[in-house]
Length: 221
Image (cartoon, rainbow, N blue to C red; front, side, top):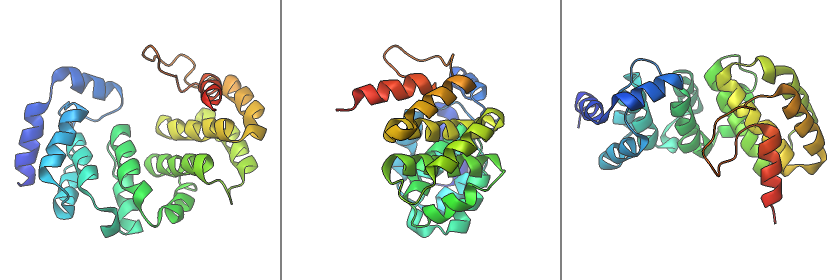
């Protein structure tokens, strides 16, 4: 199947309600409003295909990029390829799928993390903080957690919204997984107040750090 055919298939699956939801969340006009479950079905029918995935990505269409993240094979991409893909991301949903399904599985992710943590560009910075948040939670050896906390305190309030999300994840993971920082994390989260009024469904935990960290710590055995 060629790119125009896939775009036509995706367009047929779109709906206005989803388009409005996506736009409100920062998606550009080049999107169809396809539910994520349907995006996955389209990708599953295509199976892994690197050439097609890159062509879909280059279309700049949100759903096409989402499909591409599910078709890409991380081992066939260089670190430079991932840097280029990350910088050409169209919206946060695409960034999250690219980070989860491709970047996080790449052999050079630590090299990329170090590079992206110095970046001023929103999507690479978001990816760098995403990888850092994961390391804080799973393998923090070698990280200067004091320096990271100081940097978050300085940069989080004025960071781009796309970067705030994963920087906030890093802050939360510091409080959840490293008890020595918990009091400072809770105080900082309360001081900044980011996502304090974030709407969530019943039974879900909001990303507001004081609430999120407290809830996750309480769940620990």
